[in-house]
Picture (cartoon, rainbow, N blue to C red):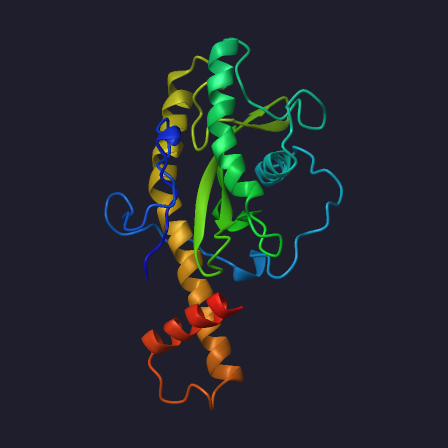
Length: 241
């Protein structure tokens, strides 16, 4: 099955992530996550609900996703205090960072309403005051294909804050501590590898779930067909609907 990892030149700072068919996970086999398809939203967008606090990496990542969905300008609460951007970043540099983030926002806001993006709770990795979370983006035209982007998070004053550079701690307020900065680089490097594996696992799991659904509820209609034939049936059904 071809997975569509997100790989745009705009994201060259950390992640190569884009809808380019045929890309392969870096360094061989994809990293395995314990995924939960119950997290994947189906058929309806979640209710807005209360604004997540920033007490956990999961909440901060959800808040970032919500900010992208609402196309925030980052100047008003609850989003003003979310960015982990260093105060020493120049306005010109900040403008460049936000320009790159707009590309991610395009995928988030362009998602089908019945299949909104979501933060994958099971794949979050936290190391001290650093963390990496992942946002899964179901493809708008193909419900069995997922892409993903990583969110770097830094804890400060008991609150988790999000880097505005996808999957990277660049331009954040990390202390001038070699150990912490080495750990940040390690998490960013791992994110480059894991992002492909996570997207692929959700895509494969979605196809398997669909195949089981067909076998269970359309058993007579598909009796004797192979998996490849069933996949073609899924594609014809989606395109015909």
